Length: 195
Image (cartoon, rainbow, N blue to C red):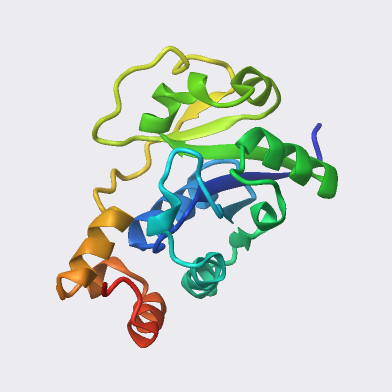
């Protein structure tokens, strides 16, 4: 029997983290065999434009604030010290070496699963790590849906996006229901996303 702790890694820029992220992470932590879910704050996603990103440590601080009352949720800044842009396969290798008593899996949306074959060393990731996949509205059945290391999880479908929130703040709309209150207070206090 495997005595290692099962950790689900939820990668993202979290720019900003919102209630949709929390609902997915909390669902994975409570309705799967994962012991914990770690939010891995990415300094730079190879598929995203960096100029729209808030400072790395500001986004890390927002995740800290968002999850402080959740026992099974953690945050990791492991990618801050890795070569950028950060690739998941490198992050997994670093975490596995640093935490040998943990078994790491990936948490991703169905839209990411359909493009997973484009990821660097995706075969290596799939061979050595489980994927926990939550549904997205745009998700189409994919080639990997029936892979032994792919777990399709019936998590709630969230239609909230960080880009929608950023644009709404810029347009002076009230987005408080979409954010944990302490995250909204931090964004408001720091005047983030207003320009």
